[in-house]
Length: 387
Image (cartoon, rainbow, N blue to C red):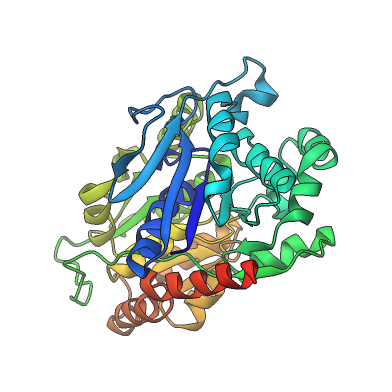
C-alpha cells in the first residue's frame, strides 16, 4: 500500500481554504486505498493554539493526524513562520517510513524544513504551493521571501518531483519564475452536503441576499464590495438587499471594516456572522442568493466551489482562479474591480439568479470538483513521481 505523508503548517479552518482542504484530500485518498496521513502543528490562527493532542497520532475528522507545538518568534516578519522543533525531530526519525511526501505551503518552517529533510534523505515529494507563487502573494513581505528563496526555497522548488497547482491560472503565474520542475494541475474538491438547494431562488422575504464568506483580509477586498453597495444604495435607495459577512481576521482590521460600513450608511444592511464552520457554514451558503468574492488574488477559490455545491451561484472577480471556469459553465458571473462598475453588476443581480444558473452550479461541482475522482488522479500522480 502506498504510504503518503501530508505536511502542512496548520489544519485550522481559521487559516482558510488551503488548510481545510487537506483534510478532505487525505480522507478521499484513504477511501481510494492510499495510506495517507497528516503531519502538522497546533497552530489555530494568529497567536492561537489548537486543542489538537501533541505528539500522538489521533483521528481528526476521519483522518490520522500528528501535531506538534509551534513557536512563533516575537519578531513581526517571522511571526507566521511557525517554528516546530518537535515536528522536525519526529520527521528525522520517521521520514524513511513513507514512500512520498505531499507538502502544502512555502515560506513556513514545517513545510520548508520538511522539504529540506526530504531532499537530504532522498525521499520524493510534491509541493502544493497554495498560491504563494502568485504575483500578488510574492509582493507581500518580498524581502523575506527573496531571502528564503535564495537560502532554501529555490532548492526546495527545484527538488520537488512536481509542483501541485489547483488551477491553470495559478500555474501560469508561477511560470514567471522560470522553474523547470514538472507541474500537476489538479483542483480541490468538495464533499457535497445534503440537502442541496433545489428551489429557484425565489425571494419571499422581498430582498436579495448576498453572502461574503472568507477570511477577513485585505486581499479579499471586502472594502471594495462595501463601496459598491454604498453606491447601489445611493442610486436605488428602495432596492431591498442584505449582505451577510461570514469570517474573521485581525481584530483591528475587522473593526476598520465595521466602521467603514457605518460611515457608508450600510450598518442596517450588514450582518456580521463572525467565523462559521460546519453546519452553520453550509446554512449560510444555502441561505444566500449569491456568493460574492471580489478578491485581489485566489489561486483556487474553495469557498466559491462550496457555494456552487449547494446551488448558490457566485459573483467573483477575475482574480479568483476558478472564476472563468464558473462563468463559462453558466454557474456564476465575473465582477469588475471598480466600485461603480461593481455596483452595476450588483444591481443586475437583484432578485437572485435564474433557475438555469442554479442547475449549472450543481452540474459543475459534480463533474469537476468531486473528491473521489480527484483522489484517483492524485494517486496516479504519486505513482508517476515514484516511477
